[in-house]
Image (cartoon, rainbow over all chains, first blue to last red; front, top):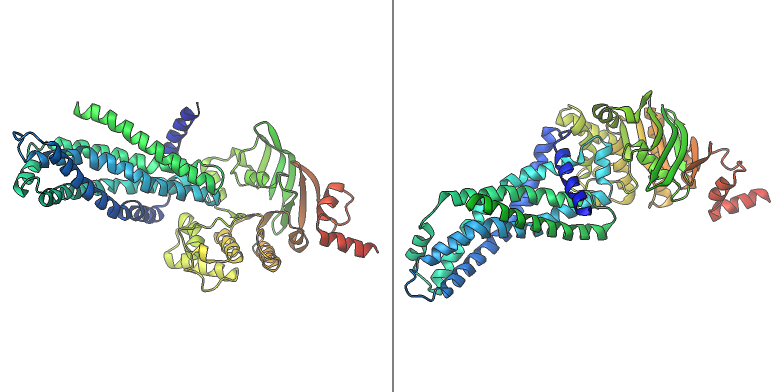
Length: 245
Length: 252
């Protein structure tokens, strides 16, 4: 029952987010700040994780290809497919649920605890439009991170391949280019846009509606991570079924 | 004029406000006093429209708060300044940006006009050369002054303060109290302060309303609070050793 109530409250929050819009001159600054906090500041960790996971995917694939009849370029092909279809959009989004999601929940939750949200409300500012809407807009830049993750992941795979001696550079690149289906990129970015909205709004929901003190802010961050990840995984399944099957 | 008429509020069937009546006038500093849990903060939050209420009316001028449209409420809120217990300054903004926010949101002033007005109110609360400091770098007293500056920057008609001097040393508390009093008379605004500090009552209380268990137990001025024979009020007033000793000295 409580979960149903929360789902209803989440959609009410989304609706209220568009009411009483904040003045554009103020909103513009909030959006730019959120782009920096949520997207630009995540570039380092995303590049790091993507590079090494790309490398690991290549090594695992190469080591499991024991059949000598399998061509070497399959390593590059498998790396590309894994990274473009699943790793970059889905796994990176789950990592972002930990990094960006807990940042959003704790920052909005702290504002709730210290009455800053009440202060916005009594000033006549719609706190949801002021706090959540710019995050949702800022996360429209999120696919930019995912494209970087795809590139760095494949690059990591290539470097692991060269240094591990699993296949030649030409074979790897041929594999990466083989049977390229442009719709796979579209599928990947459709997922990314939806995950971006989830990453901005579910953690905001948990921060905005939390009650209590500092301890509850911590609990809200954990809950927010769990629900954001669960939502991403479920929506990933539904979208994959709808778009690829 | 701000008027409260038979205000009732309950949470989970527990009545917190039980038919409060009060009237607040321009240029007057009114204090709502009472022990913790007496309903002071709930009453203030009802006045600020942060809580809805079950029965009764709140009149801002001649308009009922719960009958205002969203736009009218927004207009009303731009005439209200609030100082929260913990100051509620925005952590992500420096002091100047905190003060400028209401102007940026609700006026069409140019940037330099907004800056001038922010500097003027910061100077009015005796804060000079602190514009670029972050709230976390400011002392408790300084934060309260910034909160007051932010509350008055829009020339409000109403000023609400929730325990404005809690957590401050006695000297700074008196400075903050006097600042609120001066601003109230200078701009002829309606000021309502929640407090449980008897020093504030003595310093600035033009009108005092004493709440107990959600009921208005007593109303009067700072001059006659010491003369009342209402047991609840005398219990509250003389709960402090200092005031008890003063009374004993005078009675000798």
